[in-house]
Image (cartoon, rainbow, N blue to C red; front, side, top):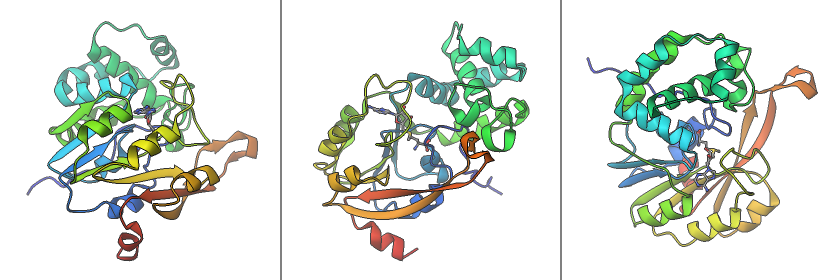
Length: 271
Ligand SMILES: C[S@@+](CC[C@H](N)C(=O)[O-])C[C@H]1O[C@@H](n2cnc3c(N)ncnc32)[C@H](O)[C@@H]1O
């Protein structure tokens, strides 16, 4: 019997669509020839399905992510060997944070170690509670075992390391589909961002494309105004991060927008 596709991603990433992937996936049209994620991150939506289109492209400006994806795609065994003997210790976590690697395989292993063991995948502080934050007590065996599934899924995926504008213009054509999940207009600033993310520049690229796009955003007046001529639906998501200021583990509800240049309201109704 063929092995059932395992739709789980392999890393936590800030802004990752792990909790929303089941809501987003049915809104993606069937008749597409290419599926492109200009803001790939941990690629939770891409990994949700075994194959979205004949051409699939993962892109992110963060070279650490791109190197990890490329190493898992091209050197899974060497990557797993590198990981196998790492101890889940605080000392190693901080040693890797200061990064002394020789090869891209070591670089990928150290990044994977840090991202899977840091609080909310932020690569800043060590996570202590496995259930919610990755955490120092995470099983090394499970982390290594996931790699084979991800390696198979990435087999035909093109991996790019470009700024979104160059990527979208390069891959745009009539039957292209872009799932765009940029940094939010109010929110986390990613390590690679030297300046504030240019939301208008993204809008100016997307408004003229020949293909279709689906865009995720935080619900804000600026974003609603910018995309007022497009199709917009509202969704809610739970933020289950540990919120110390609110006294421990509290689930907060956030409003998000899904914006498209095709009628997503219809896809939503047909669900
Ligand atoms: C919200 S996250 C994407 C999360 C992803 N959808 C997931 O499920 O994990 C946004 C990503 O955009 C990337 N990014 C930021 N500026 C960028 C740019 N100018 N071009 C391409 N990627 C960029 C960040 O490195 C980050 O990984």
